[in-house]
Length: 342
Image (cartoon, rainbow, N blue to C red; front, top):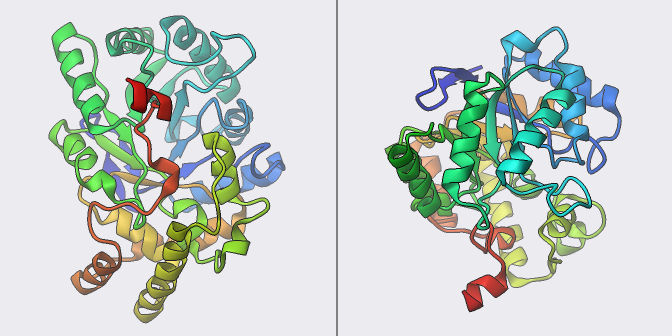
């Protein structure tokens, strides 16, 4: 396993980060099976685990808490806040009121006295970023949190947060968690350069594009029923048409990408993760296996090095800076009405 420094924190983290979104109600409901996945990842050298309060309403954090008992000191544990966690209007978001309450809940669910990396899950347009940074700085000073980071921030918000921290004397975000894959390369335009400019570590999520880059989707009909495509559609609050032109285009490109992967002797999934890890701004790629078999298929990715020729062939299919993903066609934290009406 390769280990990289998370931004300027000095913390060494594995280049594969075990994402726990699929542990719990929305994915694998068998806690013992999920724990086996965690322990196998640790045996392979993974020391970095990322979860969130909103993953199955805290169940994912609870599973991670069970899995890391007796192993806590050797691990870097990251979690996130902001998801709606109850019926009360204030049980979610990034208000100071909620952050100081929810960090205690996450600590309890994880069974630990500190969180190594505490992240705001999305940019909250209803809260001043100064308020967020001040509150998260206090959590670090109290010893409940070691480092702070952001997730799904557009480049202008990344810069705003860095400038605000400098101006107001708070701690600054040390990491960002953007979506990045062969099918979602828009981060290459501004997000990854901004992170590099400010010395931020980058934990990229969805390197397999919700399963597209495993090759398991062969036709539009494969996208119906219970799968990550349908799950992400529900989580976004919008339905997605599996017969849309964009989907047909992605499925056609998958065929061509599989040919490249076969020629270099790896699986499509392994090539897709290697592609992400090869970007110089990326610290760790978050993999989110639901089962032990899925994890086993992804672990060899760290040994795959793509040649310039292979990278050029991928670029020819999906040019740098472009995106083929309808799930993320809105800026973080914005709705269509806000974009239209200001």
